[in-house]
Image (cartoon, rainbow, N blue to C red; front, side):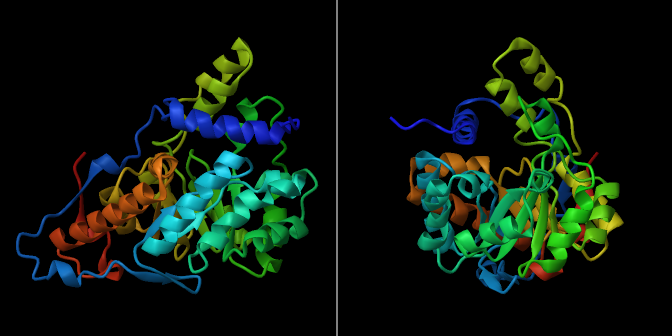
Length: 344
């Protein structure tokens, strides 16, 4: 049996832990503090509600993003194939997990390439950890990640807390903004900068706007906590206790969206982090996001079958459409904070 590389084992661990363990943040998303204003006379036909949009040159039937999750192992390659098939059928966007495994072990590249092969028409995002640019990566690796899956954009993910509580994590984030700026300026596709579950502050949003990021995925607290994931992976009690201390860390998703709006007006915002359904996505859109991303629900659905994942996407789209209808909003472009009320 071939020896498993450490990064491949970590990928496998992450996948299994997310499927089998409770890794939720101790915080909520903040979205529960908002409700839509119900319109009893919407003056709309539900069948004419338009949830579609264009982004980065691709048409999406709904503002749904299958958030970046996995790749790098045989099992995760099958998950990516099923997710991509579902995204292709439902015409929604998809991000893949960090491609470091394939950049360092090219034999794993098929577990990522499968996404574009299964979904030639979707909006597809490549993904690498920004901190790797302080560990030998450069514009060349960013381009290789994009070329590997024929991506429409590149996600650079930020995960300082995860790295800090992980055995042998990469914790040197010094000077990273300048390197992100270089990639934003020279890469031939849009660059999305994404947190992994602890949100974006106003300070970070301003910094990323100055770097030239095309979009920011706030990935706020309220969903999967990667410190909890690392707690389950830890091999010793001290590391487990270190990770466990941060279960309640982060900026809730709703607050993170508003942070970006204040700090970087006009920035394209993707919302993720604890979104449960289409109603949560619609709340994020009203607060200022362009797409709403979910990961855990789609991961569990794809672990069952492509058909299960496809049904979940269609249900989520219908939830968004019904929300628009009941709020008296005929199209996504007309949805904004005026359709919401703060309930506490």
